[in-house]
Length: 113
Length: 113
Image (cartoon, rainbow over all chains, first blue to last red; front, side, top):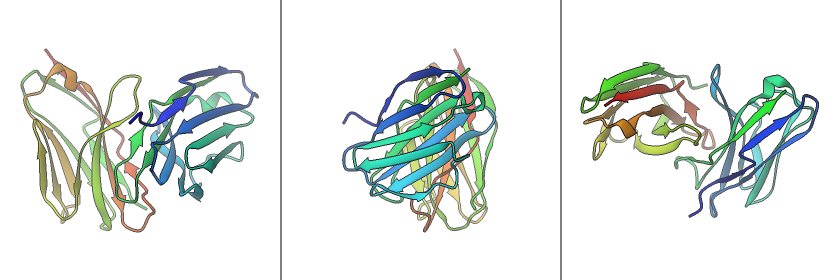
């Protein structure tokens, strides 16, 4: 079991640029989650999918953020245009079904200058 | 929605002593309570979980207790070791939320050799 795989591990970009974060969930898991972690706000749920369908995107901060899950093995989180306040660690997590534990990737550390 | 509070935010113990981290939750519908350990540069990893139909669960040096009436649950680590140093997060998952998790703000545990 390779676990949840995220790429890139680190991303440094300039304000205004588009950023795309990628996630491969654990095979067979039906739910996928995107979280953002900062010192000030802790772990924030941005969006989650069940069976590739977005269920709740109320945590997405602005229209600059979008997420897709074109198939069961891949998801992207896009920020366009990026701003310095988007700097954070972004985690992807997956779970087998409701009430089962989340399995997190190692995150993408995003720095927007 | 659910609100999870976690205390203390930082905790230092001598190696070999016990550490206790406490969380409270607000939604009586919550029925699943996992605990995660996050080491530097990594994603949170599940260390133990408990469901609302039991009051206590133990796994070697780690135990979790749940008091549904008082809406609080605790993590107990006995015989602490330096490798236990990390940030620990509690979480609560209410029924009928499509597998949503609400996280505490984290406890930074330092075990002093």
